[in-house]
Length: 355
Image (cartoon, rainbow, N blue to C red; front, side):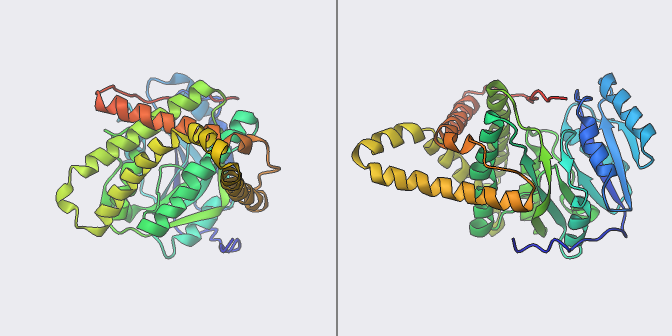
């Protein structure tokens, strides 16, 4: 609410928006056409296609033919989103690199709002919101608030860690020159890049207005598979950073490690949410009611703000499922820790997207 919605820059330095795509030709138009409608003038949209994905190449060619500011390239480093972004960044000569997923729908003022932030900061990250269109999708939205959005604010306040990510984000070229490109060895290259930027002292602005909406998962199978990949990648990144234990007395390094440790300790505790609530309800029902009421007030108040600022509508019913959501997410974390300990390999998981 403290953001100035009129703080916009509509022209000046060159911006190249990168949209990596793999096996999602039916949703590619969402991000591309919304980026074409951007109010920022000096913008080029580059679709990065995998060479073995002909349907996406054909769709990208159609979009490039329809819009003068759109072009497409074939990834010379195929096999990962990180490789696609790295290849495009190396080919680009733009002052600022913006990144979006194929299914995102950026607000027309997103780039202009981000460019205004880059007058004083190195990186501008704008919210990416799951669109609550059904019961499971509504559950995903409230999960996002409780387990991603609000904890990230807490990490910023307590540890000074700000998330960068690889979607709905604008990055100065100088950041890549200082920090390097994305790691192609990690499932979650965005978290690895986040902590490298944090430890390099990059200035990161997190913006809430003019968000990008994204398509949430539509089945429980996709929900589970996607989060197992996310948390496995998160654990892998944390493990790789922890190997540099000699830097433990560096404040930025220590805050990164604390964030990793806190994420997984908290996740394990969440796995017992429903049993603990059921047990506590027997002995202290008033305490349980007050605790749940507090959580519901927090998320519903945040939803009121999103209805006003981000353009969501109503409240849906996903908030009722919050105790179950927390428990299930905790079980994901437990599964990931056990799987990682026994050497079980987790690969990229792609959720089904609707046309």
